[in-house]
Length: 196
Image (tube, one colour):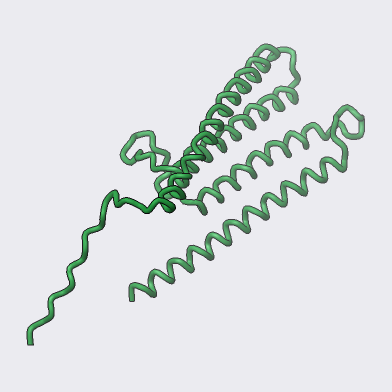
């Protein structure tokens, strides 16, 4: 009894033409391009803001108290963290939802970009938002020392709500990470079941 020959596999078609409606739907991803370009412009505005704040700090270096210098430096860190968040959204979002950047092998390729997907991007964004919120909360706590003297714009209720909102950000990030982990496990188990 001779073994039956296996059915030959058809080669994967590269650049296979899509039907008109799927092509329209797939091509609509390019509508996001102006959004990412807009975020690049916003990044430029943050560079101008950073330089302005840095000049303000430098020009008042001998006039400011230690607390004022600390608040100015925290403002600079805040601008940098928001700028980092913008870069993650611009690069990661474009790579995930619009088109590949083809940076493999480039010496400046971000390490996280090689394994970015919508779930990873959500977790990274949540962590960045928590970092930004932490800087704002730290600034609030530093300035809140003047609550009893009335030398600050903050109120006890405002500080309390800012703390609650920060806690909600942390709980949301934990929830996103947990859901991503559970769904990743389910996908891995499904792949193992199919391979067996």
